[in-house]
Amino acid sequence: MPAAPEEIGKKEVKTKELTVNMGPQHPATHGVLRLVLELNGETVVKCTPYVGYLHRGVEKLAENRTYMSALPLTDRLDYISSMANNIGYCVAVERLFGVEPPERAKYIRTIMAEMTRISSHIIGVATHVLDIGATTLFLYSFRDRETLLDLFEMTCGARLTVSYPRIGGVRNDVSQEFIDKLYEFTGYFPETIEREYETLIDRNRIWLQRTKGIGVISAEDAINWGLTGPTLRGSGVPYDVRKHAPYDAYDKVEFDVPVGKNGDVYDRYKCRMEELKQSNRIIRQCIEQMPRGPIMAPDAPKFTLPPKDKVLTDMESLIHHFVLITKGPIASPEGEIYSATEVPKGELGFYMIGDGSGKPYRMRLRSPSFVHVSVLPELCKDALIADVIANIGTIDIVLGEVDR
Amino acid sequence: MTIKDLAKRVFLVEILKGMALTLRMIFTHAVTRQYPEEKRPPFPGFRGLHALVRKENGEAKCVGCGLCAAICPSKCISVYTSEGSDHNKVVDRYEIEVLRCVYCAFCVEACPFGAVVLTDHYEYSDYSRAAFDMDKEKLLANWDKFMAGPKGEEYFKRFWRPLSEDYATPEDQPVFRGGAGAPKALPGKETVEVQGGLSDAA
Ligand code: SF4
Ligand code: SF4
Image 1 (tube, rainbow over the protein chains, first blue to last red):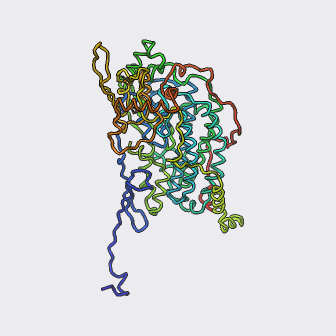
Image 2: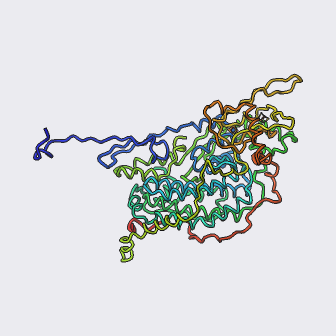
Image 3: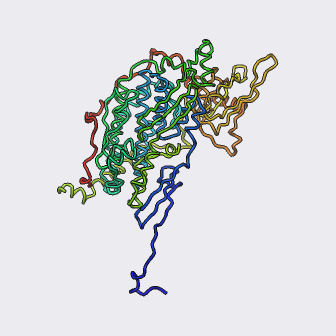
């Protein structure tokens, strides 16, 4: 029998939190991320991320590969910005070996890394916006990314998993067509950002309401959580590996580090948009300054591969060729190194230990996405359930890198 | 909030601007392709399906040194050799499990003879997995198919790196030739603040 109207409210009603599983197969989690949400009505009381669905053991696999053939493993960390991961790996191994790539290779790498940053940021922003409910930007950004992927394909024959840089240089030189087309792209791209991307969402009231004041994290907290990249800079901390420990050609180009103020979703979005323009600026400078010269370091035959045309004519090259491929570099150093590079998502660190054999004794990866996932419970605490999606988008994670 | 802001708010200015943009886009050219009917040819040097190079006498160029199998990061190449009648090395079986391959082209780079190549074929689909366990015959057939196409041998030279010229400065090395559109002037500060606080919510 239904309770009499006067009895409602008097009776003690037992309430408890509702536990909801979000993911691992959820379109808004950008991969196989599982969140267990404890809800009190619409409010998230507790959010616990579970990771590991995409674990492939990249670190362990690298221990059984020579320094050269471990390179394709890094493509598959953050598969949207594989070029930047490759470069991070090569820079780490170069530091361990004490090799310096030639100038031209440094410029080419910087160009490639910044192209990757553009394509990763436009995907990051576009999927973020798509999750919140705007489709158009997603389509426009894929059009622009296509231009960049075509340029990757033109240079190295692959669009996504590029494996392009080599220890001590890059695999092959860029073509004149590449330089011209990329320069043309950098000419119109900043305008495209303003005319299309920003017109669509920058001041759109729905977007503003969904992002301003959401997922706020203070500068101090952001540092304590170990955030890096635009996710940290959105809180106003101007930390950028490219500025603080320059590698490749970053010390020869001018660029600014955009920082936010409030540390909310909107500021992080703004940082990414500004970084697109800065990356564009870096690419232009690199193209203009790029010198002529070799693309492989002079001592590279000892740890990458000797020139092909010499392998069957020159005894030393032949020996190097066989030993390098079967055993790895003969002159592999002992020692350890931590090397950080700024990938689109944040600071990608490689901690490598060499034991004198041709394979890394240990390769430990500090992947930005993994660190960023750990801040999700903090961002989602006491937020509305709809804001969980905004928070996942704003930390811009790729699960390949989280689970490694 | 100024009158101007209020007017912007009331008349949905930013929404209308966005709509105008999407409306304009309707009248521009489509950038998409109707894929299976309309295909974009891959760029020279595209890393697609494997092939084993055939010599002029019709035999495979591969000598069975096994370097491609040694460097392969996904360990998907197996080469089996035995001793021939006049003490030469004979390649009995050469197999690539194509489904495990990651298309890094390291096998091409490792081969001292340029005997294995990646072709421009990128549509992998079949009804059985067995179709992708490529043996020597299938790989040689891939080469025939590839050579019948427009690309030819010039194509795979793009993977077969590094060459001596990569360690030197070629005469005709491409550099920037100047181009239209001066770089956009951007603020010259070390860091730029990107926005003006919560209060300026539209
Ligand atoms: S392309 Fe790479 S993964 Fe594929 S067979 Fe060659 S070396 Fe192995
Ligand atoms: S490296 Fe070349 S020659 Fe040696 S086994 Fe492989 S395909 Fe044959």
